[in-house]
Length: 223
Length: 223
DNA sequence: ATTTCTCTGGACAAGACTGTCCAGGATTGG
DNA sequence: CCAATCCTGGACAGTCTTGTCCAGAGAAAT
Image (cartoon, rainbow over all chains, first blue to last red; front, side, top):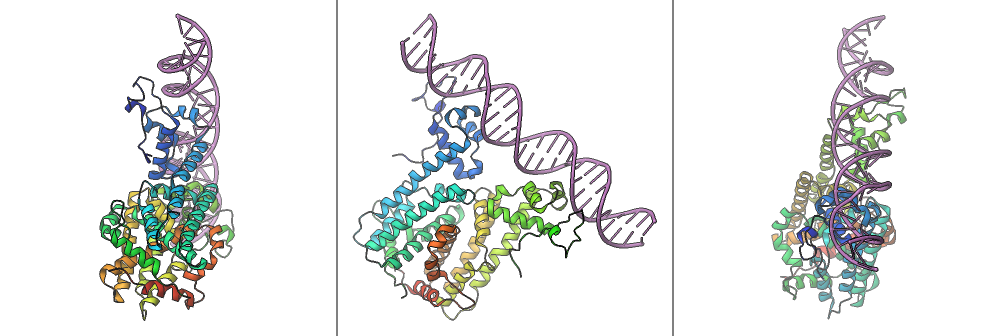
């Protein structure tokens, strides 16, 4: 499935539309541009006018597809949930011969843009800080994800208490990583370290990453 | 020094103002309310009208203190830098008999609201995602902080490479922690684990936290 | 070909926000 | 007591945004 597809303007897509004077768009087009704007400018940037301009379409036709801006935001939220939380849960349940490889699976899931859109996740997280309904949904998502990671550790023999602690450290570390790593200057400067901890090439995890995961998975917790 | 002081309305502060018809405020009052709004509603919520209403003052008098809204935001940014980055750097340079205690110092700094305002930090971080100038300033702050943590590890005998990796893991983990932990429901559910990793009471670090820090500091990294 | 249904564009109203101008109250210094 | 200065409130203009209404263009169905 092609994810994060660029917003399609039908006038630029002769296969779909004969490029007549009348420009036509789909609800998905509105949603795609809205998602891009949410990511790049935050929820405040998701304006009907801005989307319509990027779509090359009149602002008022928006209201044929969505009842109001509020309904668009609701659709955006549903879209996020389907995109980001499901893959994480699935990856945590992936069979792994030991905890090291399980942690590697987790790392890979968070690094692969096809499995997890970190920019989108943080855009929603930011949005949730100022909207109670969004907040409860992202809280639910965090709870689900943490539970999955905890189950992953528990499945490999860790006691409940330690599995929870490790899950939190792991998940928080990834969130912190994404919270900062979005910026370019630091990305360039630390590409080496990325490879150290999170670098995967092809389908097989990098040996160094495996070693890092093992170091994390096998270190002793205090009694 | 009293930090994060509640915004003072002079009309509610008879010691300072005789509660006459004319209400007077200071530039600091505008700034304090602006900071609160930045934290609670994001930079989009920092509106002149909203601040004036909370101050019980006419909107137009704002322009006597600040040239424009833009100048207020600039002041807000300066204020953040002075509040949050300095204490972290200072705490990383604190003398510690070994790396475990150094890590404890770091933990404590990020947990103590008097030393580091996590909400403010994340509000600025969020703001930076949509404003280039803010972004460069927070990038600089992150670089400084990471350098300080790296130096902390290096000072206790870690090789440059490993010191950098550990600094990043530690700092990212804290950022991830704060990125999620702001929410109440999860806070309550995980108070136990908080104590496990980050719990400090009084001036002496909790023994469990020391043990956690030791576990982190002493775990082996892969070659 | 004609009718019907989809969808778009332009005009309009209403509200929120920023920034300016200026009269004048309150306070301070002489 | 008077004058200069500090600070505030109200009015006004301009911009940006959401949402409504309706005429009518195109496409599809009959």
